[in-house]
Image: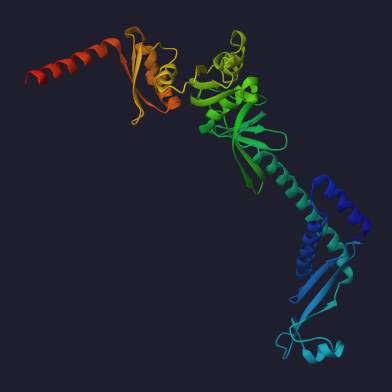
Amino acid sequence: MNSEFLEALYALEKEKGVPVDILLETIEAALLSAYKRNFGSAQNARVQISRETGDYQVFAQHVVVKEVVDPKLEISIEEAQSLDPRYKLGEVIENEVTPRNFGRIAAQTAKQVVMQRIREAERNLVYKEYIDREGDIITGVVQRVEQKNVYIELGKAEAILAANERVPGEAHRQGDRIKAYILEVKKTTKGPQVFVSRTHPGLLKRLFELEVPELFEGIVELKSVAREAGYRSKIAVFSRDENIDPVGACVGPKGMRVQAIVNELNGEKIDVIKWDPDSSKYVAASLSPAKVVAVEIWEEEKVARVIVPDFQLSLAIGKEGQNARLAAKLTGWKIDIKSESQMEEIYQREYAGYTQDYAE
């Protein structure tokens, strides 16, 4: 190793971001291990690489003691002071023991260490890049599908779309370009592992931010998201500017903005509703596209009873209760849906009970 070796390390520092001092310290530790392995040394030793020339030296170390127990590790105070009267008990004496044929081993070891540190540095850079993007969207190309898991090529890293994070009914083929939501980034022995989702509500939120400038700029705020991936979603939006309609901004001219997101999600239906600080109005809007006649609320219990026309009851509840379920997720309220005729029966029973109690 020489000055050219040092120049190569400085070049790596600029290119890969690995400090030269860290590289040299790692190489020194690796050379010491190689020295002990190849020359059967059981003694204490130290390897030093010159920061000016790149030359290396191996030094044996002995502790100055009163009485020597292990000559490989210790030296008597008398012998030490015969070398230099200034030595005291407990001090360490070093003498160079660099083997003559150590050069080839040193060069090979240094190469292996540098390559390993470069790989680690590259992995760390990729990890830092993606760990900062947790909760964001990535776009990649499907590389392969194994055991229902989809592996997505991101360029510098590979993402895993696990079977339980895939949308029911979506088929992914090699070469397909897809968007996904970054759930988690982990460090592994094989490098950073990126785990993504196509079902997470955050994917819908990020897609709207990409399509709707008013959301990205903060003029329109996305208050809540409820999603049953692959089937139907609801989002509640609010405008900080009274001159901007939040629903219209998200739907876009002729529905173009929301349609782009529907296409990305392979036909998933999306209801965009206006968030309202008035709980009764918000709950009523959440059951869109059903029309609501009245809403009775119990604030403390977070329970709302919603009355709809008879012909709107099935629409309000939705197929297998989906519309009502999503509305409850979106608002955070427990919603009880009744038709007008059902409420009339309830009122009649309550009235009959009241008159009977009164008569008694």
